[in-house]
Image 1 (cartoon, helix red, strand yellow):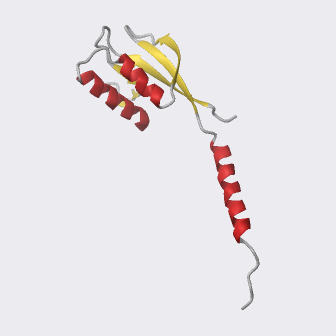
Image 2: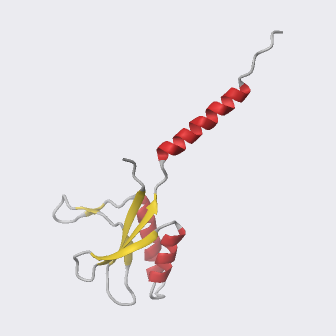
Image 3: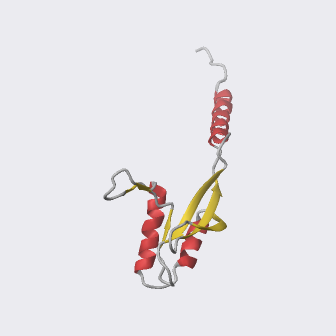
Length: 124
């Protein structure tokens, strides 16, 4: 079954108007002393932008964060409790392009182009 939606969770890392927000932040806890962040590149870029917004000291940044995600097609689905103290999360989704359909469309376009240019060769 093809994947139709991509999800992300925006989490609040502090309370109050100066809340820090991060999206899909993931850590590897194999080493007990210090976990290693393994967040996907696209979400690291969002988090870098959100950190810059937070560093501007213009609070709250949540409207700007929501606008940024919305600009990339993310839709707010629901809020959730992450289980951490002060760990509110907002759940977003956006459609994933069906890669098989895109590939079929590209292949069809190539075959129709090949048919058009594939006429008889003239003998000289």
